[in-house]
Length: 243
Image 1 (cartoon, rainbow, N blue to C red):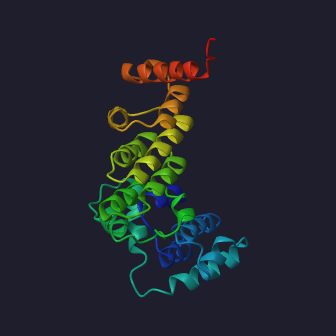
Image 2: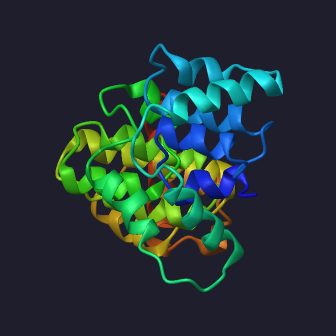
């Protein structure tokens, strides 16, 4: 069987493919609702069988709903599971599965509702953020924040954060700064690439969080200087005037 975490990060699954995975035993029946729940929320919680599957509990009910979903497509919905199984087992088979089932779908904007801020706050596949940057999605910065909160690998997140910090739109740069602050709080790390961009595009909130949550021996001298002078300036503004 394919673990749902592997399936989640290595492919952008359609509802019919999720149904096929459960109906044919590619994924454990008790894990299918969790996989359906993730996809359902990515799509903005539309009404229908996918949402019912996301909330199903009884194994018989889960399997019945899986069969319904699997029947909604005439395509080879097992193809993605053959790819995922080979990928998980590292059989060495040559496959274009990642391109077909993740990168190409991300490039087309499939699998997520890019109009919904609530949906994008749950973004957890870096490849979809890359594709959103390439497409010029208006809310790509929100997706970067979602990635910072959802993805377990901070270094994968920071590559996308750096891209947001260096964006030509101020709003996206601000979102990038927020995402950088979240990574600092959650993981206590920052990348050299992000620091280089932050030096060109200062953001006091992000810099303050780096100062608080990242070991200071890992921070560059210019950031030390900014924090020291910023604090000195605040103290000077608060000092009472002499009479």
